[in-house]
Every structure is written in structure tokens, then in C-alpha cells.
Amino acid sequence: MRPGERAWTRYLILGLPTAYFIALVAFPLFVLGRMSFSVPERGRVFGDGFSFGNYAEIFANPLFLETLGVTVRIGIIVSLCALAIGFPLALFIWRAKGWVRSLVIFITIAPILISVVVRSYGWIVLLSNRGLVNSTLMYFGVIERPIRLIFNETGIVIGMTHVLLPFMVLSIMSTLQSIDRSLEDAASTLGARPLRVNLEIILPLALPGIVSGMILVFILSVGSFITPVLLGGQMVMTLPILALQQFQTTFNWALGSAIATMLLVAVLLITTVFERLLRKHLIRGAG
Image (cartoon, rainbow, N blue to C red):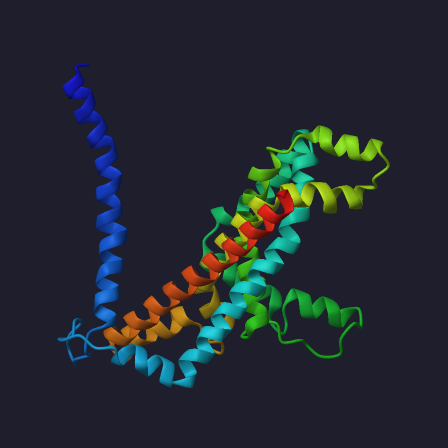
């Protein structure tokens, strides 16, 4: 290959992903941001002029701020639940061997292969008043009447934790694979019990994967739409649902764009602060 052809090929390889990113990510985000500062007009997607009125309306209306709090709270709870389940599961997979390891990995990532709608309806069947969970608890006398497990934040958290758990497990697994197993054997030889080995050796070394998993799960959970709609039953309002209502019901595209932009900014701020705090903790621990 000639030098000129080699340079042309290199530019083509780098240019195609760049063009893809600009066309399908950067430009839509620019349009969304520009639309959020426009003046709403009836019958038009794009309003004329430039105004901060949409953001002023958001911060002046308690409903928007309450919805933001609910969205962030659900994201944090889902991240913590996914971590509580995902870290022990990732440890088990890391230490397992043979067909047991393959089987657990398949069971863990299987939810990704199923439609979100199907999974959400499956949880509705399990968590409804006459579902398997309530029927079993009532049969054994644990409860006298059904517990409300869906059409509230509890159902959303359960469903979204199940949907996003594989992302947490895979993120932690990617870090565990780089840990030298001889460290665990050395700690055990020196008399450390398994619990202490996991908390004082494995957990700190797996912290980068835990952080990556929590950030990923948080971002996906606060931006989720289908699961909150189906398991929340329109009883729990999140920012994605509120933004869609502005687009489809009131046809206020400017306000809907402002809500979506505010969600994006809030997620970026929260993840950036969390990452910097953790980085300081890691640097301090290394020192």
C-alpha cells in the first residue's frame, strides 16, 4: 500500500465513526438544546426567538423539581440494589469454574436477550396482588392481605434492578479478572478469614469496576422509560415520562426539550461529582 493510500485509509477509518457520532449523537443533542431555549408556539416544533422561559417554568413549578427528585432517588436506589446483588454474584462467577461458571454467566446476561416489555410484564404477573409473590406469602401465612408491589416506586426499583443487573456484574467482572489470585491465597495463609479478604483486599481492588457499574446503572435507570411506565402504572412520574407528555400530550416541544436537557445536565453533574470524589479517595488510599 502506498503512503498516500495508507493516509487516505486512516482518515476514512477515523472519519466514519466521527461522522456517525456527529450525525446521530452530537447534532440531535444540539437541536434538543437549541429547542429548549426557543419560545413555544402552537402548531410548530421549533419556536422563534431565544428565551430562558422554559427553564424558569421548570424551576418555578414544584412538580418538575419533585419529579427530578423522584427520578434521581430511583436511580440511586437501583444502583445500590444492583451493587448489593451484583458484587457477590460477580465474586461467585470469578471463583467458579467449568460449567457452573458458564451457567451462571448465561443466567446473569439472559435478561439482556429478552425484550424490556416482556420482562416488565413478567414482573407485573409476579408482583400483582394475585401474583406469585403475594399468593405464596399469603399461603404460608406471612401476610394476611396482598402487599402493593407494583404501580409504585417499589415495583419500578425491582424491575429496573433486574433489567440493569447484568451491566453491574459485567463491569465488576472486568475488574476482577485483572486481580492476582495469589493475593487472596497469601491473605488466607496469613490467617485472614474469607470475609476479611473480600472486604479488605478484593473490594478495594474491584472499586474501579464498582464505580463504572454504578455510573452505568444510574445513567440507564434515570433515562429509562418503558419499565417506569409499565411497573409504575402512571402513578410514579419520572422526568422521561414527563418530557414525553410534553411532546405528545401538550405538544410543548420547547418545554419537553428543556426537561430532557435538564435531566442530561443533572446526570452529568452527579456522575462527575461522584467520579471525582472516588478518585480523591483512591489517591488518598494509595498514598
